Structures are given as structure tokens and as C-alpha cells.
Image (cartoon, rainbow, N blue to C red; front, side):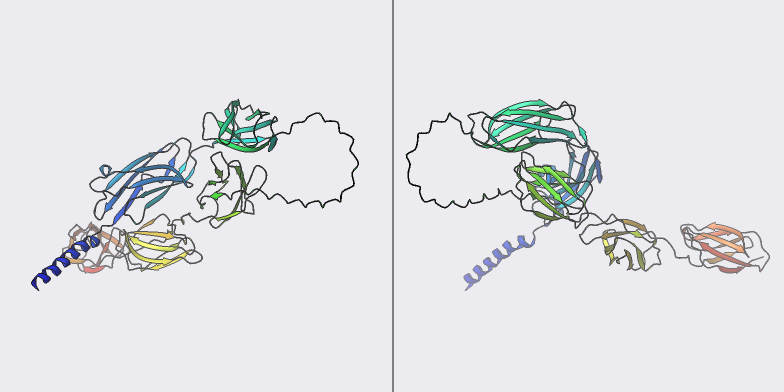
Length: 506
């Protein structure tokens, strides 16, 4: 029996020992800030953050930073344990490159064990337009022995770029058939004639043009090549022996050739802050974007199967975009529909001045937005703006000098910049006490730092500032004995208290 009890006790201790770590698991949290919210071209972004495991430094969590623009990864960086300070601090300086685009960039830091990654959007401006290559051929279908007349143009925004070297290559099934470098003319245009060998093979030929100074600027187009049928002198036809006329057979009904299936473009998320539309589609195809109203955009997919279309202006959240691709032979893909998501933060709430006697916070914000009132990180009260943007939120009166933070959050979860309000002192000081009085001096107690005034009728006959201990002494002009004098206090905020009436001494 005793041995059995020891076994049960040992099992319980083992069970408790295994269970405790599960309850002791520490939460991993990540937070960070940047030195600014907006950056110019080629500048540096300073990121300072904290990764914690419980209250200790987040060692072993491998915090990872990514910088993305329009869904495209610009930079990635991972801290190791030696880069994490004893208090969990982490830092990183990101150098913006030369060939980036203007717009919204997203910084995100994640860590192993963290339930939520920390994310922040920044704005980048100052980059100029990028060079663009256009590429055309005189036909889309050729026979061996024919010449492909290639033409194109180099542009930079609305300008034509002259004296630019363009490398043109022709490939079939990954095998390079030819390469030639041409130079753009004064109008940015270039041409090249590629002769298909007479003994060439049939198939799809891929023509690619790329800038020699920037290999990231390229464009491709596919053409179809078939084998030419050789012609020979006709052989004299012998006189045929008459034969009975055979019974004609029915002419078969031709089966229509099915259209070539073009892949539907794979489009990245478009938000109300996006300045470009990006995605993937068949190389050489033309991507079309429209809202079926006023917007109509197009671009040719690059050789690597990606495309990027600059927007003339940011799109309104909820806008529906209809996107399709058209191949070089004119076949169209099915249409994909994309809705612009809301990433635009509401405007900063306009808050009416708050006094220490007020029992509500009022103002105007985005219609139907959620209004949050905080002191520090503590939520004091919440409310909602009406359909016209007006809000009124009940509060308990704040102490004068309290800093109140008010934000607006829209239906999409976007949060406005904080409106900071300092609570004004509107409480009048208490009636002063008079502890001693002579014909030329009055002493007593009042609100520290306030000013005490003594009047006879409407004339001020003396004043003094109350010291830090709340004691004052006012020197006055000698008055007729028994004259009615008023002693009152005015605080630093300009609030005036009720007067104490005293009679002048001899």
C-alpha cells in the first residue's frame, strides 16, 4: 500500500512539472517607430523597435523586417540574438534605392511566437518617372525565310529618349537565335530587321528588347513562325484515261478552331493609397484596366511576366476595377473584378475646447466614425460621429492641464492622427481668507500662485501674488476707518473668485 502511494505521488509530481511550463509560456510582442512618416528619394529610414518575450528581451524570436511597395518586396532583414539589446531594443537603417517609385511603402516586423506583427505605412516622394520601352513587329505570323521588322520607342514620362542603346534578342524555346544592339533616334524610336533562316524551325519566337544601361527595363513579344512550302517546276500532266464519274462524297463540315486561352491577370491588392496597379500575366500580353466609366489604362507585360500601371490619381475606396489581358494575336482573357480597399485614414477630429468643468467632449470628424477619447494609453470614453460628422461623448470632468487624445476610426479600421487637447482651467478660485489687517496691510490665505486684489469701490488699492504656501500680504493705501473693502483672487487661467468684504482699520 505504501509503495502504491509513492508511485501515485511521483506521477502527480511529474504531471505538475510538465504542466507548469505550459502556464508559464511568455507572450512575444513586437513594436517599432520610424524617425519620420514621409521620406524623399534616396533617403534613409531609421527604424527603432522593441521585441519582448514577456518582460525580457526577445532572444530566440528571430525578428524579421520587410519593406514592401505595391506588394513588391523591396528589402528584408533579420536580427539575430546578438543584435537584440538587453532591454529588447532593435534598430535598422534602410537606404532607399535609386530606381524606386513614389507612393505608400509598408514596413512590417514579425517575430517567432508573436501573435501579431507590427506594421506601419510611410510615404516616399521625389522619384522621377522611369524609362519605358515599347516594342512592335510588322506582323504576328511569319514563315521561314521572311524578315521580322522590329520597331519600338524609349520614353521617360512624356519625353522621348535619344541615343539609348537597346539590346534586341530573338529566342526559340530558350535557345538564343540572334542578338543585336541598336540606338534610339532623336524621337526615341529604334528599328531592327531580323531575317528568319530559310532552314529555321517552326514554333514561337520570343523577341526581347532591354536597355543596356538598366536591365530592369525590358519588354518582350512573341511571334509565330511556320515552315515555308518549297515551290518546284510543275511536271507535265499526262493525258488521263477517261474513267467513270464517281459518286461525289459529302464535303465535311469544317470544325472551328477554338480560341487560344489567355491567362487571367493575377493582380495585387489595390488600395485607396495605391499609385500603381501591379501583378502578373502572360509575357508580351497587353493588360487592360477600366472602371467602365472614365478610367482606361493599359500596359504591355514585361519579359518576366510582371506588369505595373501608374494611376493618374489615387482611387476612391469601393471602386470596382475590371482587368483583362489581350495576347499579341488578339485573344482576350476572362475579366477579373477587383474592389479598391480603404486604406485612407480619416481626417484629424476637430475638438471643441475642453474645460475642467465640462462633462462631455464635442466636435466634428468623419461621418459615422468611431471616436475614442484617451488620457495616455487609457481609454476614457468612446462614441460615434453622426451622419454629418458631429459627435458628443459623455466624460467625467478632467483636471485642468490634463492632455486628452482624441482619434477617429473609420469602418475599414483606419485610424486618424491624434488630436491633442489640453484641458483648460475654468474653475474660479475660492474666496480668500483674511487672517490679519492693519490700516496699510491685509494678510491671509488663498490659492497658491494666484493674485490677490483689494478694491475700494471700483478702484484697486493694492495687489500681491500668493506664495507657494498659499500665504499673501497686500500693501494698501490707508483708507478711512470702516471703509468697505473687497478682497478677491484671480488665478493664472484668468478665473476670478468671489470677493471677501472687510472694513478698513484705523
